[in-house]
Length: 590
Image (cartoon, rainbow, N blue to C red):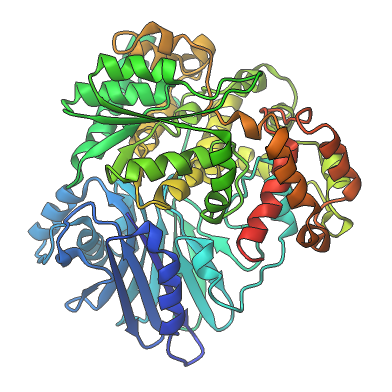
């Protein structure tokens, strides 16, 4: 797990190594163990390393292979690299390291761009081909690892976060109106290729990109998720057993492919609790688990210790609990926001940031439960959509969008008023998915697009801010493909995640399985009052906010007057949404 960046010039100039050095420095938190730079005429790469596999200097990056003329910078983990390495050795390739980085490079030398279809894991990488003067980039199927870029007539730059790209002084930092609409409709999700800034884009999950020496860019998908039933018929028990086996395999991969210990972020919910149980099934010993809690509000508890404690006791883990008072949350909020590659509205972003700080002091790799709700239909809005009538967008929009288009027009300045871009985008994406039913389409859209820029990005940003690698077994692409082919009634059963609850019956305490669906609680950002209200008032009334003029003042004042009464369909606080974007822009110096 690392941070990568680079520049490729098309204007007959040498790559700006000074700029790449500054970009690399902005990636330091992602890779505290080592730093590397590479320059070859029009190209320069930077790398910050978090050493997880092959801890020796042999896996230093940028990794240069003089034999093939290829150089790579890579962020992520390839879980099937030992098998690929054996195949490549059988084909005559020689290795100088024992890690997964060199395996990608040799795989590209052997199979070209088709190598990505053979990689099983989470990854974002760039390969410079000195002989062909071309740059190849790829991102994993589920977008677990980020890959941002900026492209103009003279240069192509890429990085693991937007902050590194903003080291250049020629990035267009004006607001993208379409992205702004997405952001406020989809609770901070801006699907690739857009970001909130016009001058920065991101490679879509499951896609590759090739850039040649005259600046032509070609992008294409190498993987798509289909939600079709298999030809063979399986009953509910058979589906449960197949999912259980796939989960065990996924957890085991993410346990064994590491040269350092692996722990678990144990929230107290079903998903992370099941990970602990599955790891125990796979023979994991002396497992470390970590839980964080916050202050209660009258409407909501701030911790789930009552659910995480029994799981830790049941499996005799080395359990660590952290309780954070609200005063500390507010004090540390600016740091968490500065660590965000893009604005995030989720109340648990700061929770992950503070938890990751503590965990990183003891361990380098954790498994986390993100993706289970989307893959296995765990959220309350899926049954609502399933039971609704009308066109796909009419069934989707009322239960997921954060506000109506009319309210959006009431909220933003006239400069950003436009069409209902988000409805058109979601309608197009739902229509493009090959699936057997509407709810199959919704789940496939969520897994391949929406969660990429919400929980998945959030976990990557907040853990990597502390040099902590988070592995997400529920987003193993083989497991995702299997779950997508399963009849949705087995997922929607028991109020959602029915198949996971069935698997858990013999593995977890009943109170963890049958509890109401929980959310990583950070109540003070949902029910806004006291010092949190004053903080948001200060942000939205600041001179910077007024000069930027994103919002209509009448709408801001309406929310400030009743801050804890304006919530979205999925229970987000609308005032926090407004403050979060403005505060992110301020913290990035924009």
